[in-house]
Length: 282
Ligand SMILES: NC(=O)c1ccc[n+]([C@@H]2O[C@H](COP(=O)([O-])OP(=O)(O)OC[C@H]3O[C@@H](n4cnc5c(N)ncnc54)[C@H](OP(=O)(O)O)[C@@H]3O)[C@@H](O)[C@H]2O)c1
Image (cartoon, helix red, strand yellow):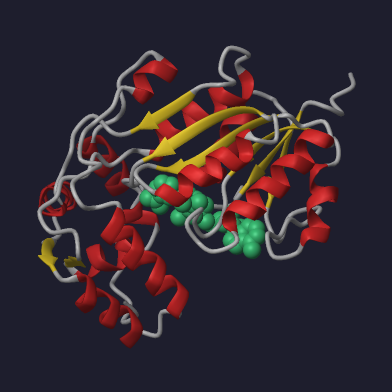
């Protein structure tokens, strides 16, 4: 069997959403190439010479940019990568984008302009940020200290996002679609802390801080300047109430309801996500 053109390159294939997309494609017996700096061949956004070899023999791409489509140079990079993918025989692209971020919108346009068979997955904040990313340390320390005010966010379970990505990559009816993806309910950070406390048995509370206090705290803990800037942008731009409403994106794409925060928290507890003791770095 010639599978030469059927492989999917999953960028960020070792990351939160990419890993889940890889698992799902492999479970279907579909050929996958894990896009990673440690991949075979390696893929590195910072080294354009790695892009062409990574695309060789590939027919579709799950495109996630790291760290965020909002950082300088991201729009140009995703445009160039997508154009190369289209030229090298991988026109089908599922792009992970950020909801309510003007820069992410420009990234979507840049990829669309290449003529790719594009599905846009425009996602709100991930539930898994509380268990697999920077908010994990906050949960373990018992205090979620963030500049989120009392604005509700319709957090998305990235198991749903990965299901939508796989549909986008494998279903011929998907290209051209744009999905706004959220969970089924909007929760404030205080609500999220309460659900995590109830599920885990830990005492976790939300402590609202200002953008300036948050940035100062990050700098004190040695977080690099560009990461501080990115998080300040995201909290200032995305968590301001404009993106508080839920959407039908998961139902449109999959014909079922999205998973809710309580199910996510129960799953995270079962997986031992919040068993560790806190580290001092935060
Ligand atoms: N977190 C959210 O709530 C959220 C919401 C909406 C959209 N998004 C978007 O999701 C995307 C990914 O963010 P994430 O926070 O979920 O991160 P992530 O995918 O978990 O990030 C880690 C991945 O990035 C890869 N990576 C890091 N540096 C790289 C480089 N120089 N070249 C190639 N790959 C590199 C890592 O691969 P290796 O280390 O193996 O090389 C790893 O697979 C971003 O564009 C973000 O805007 C995130």
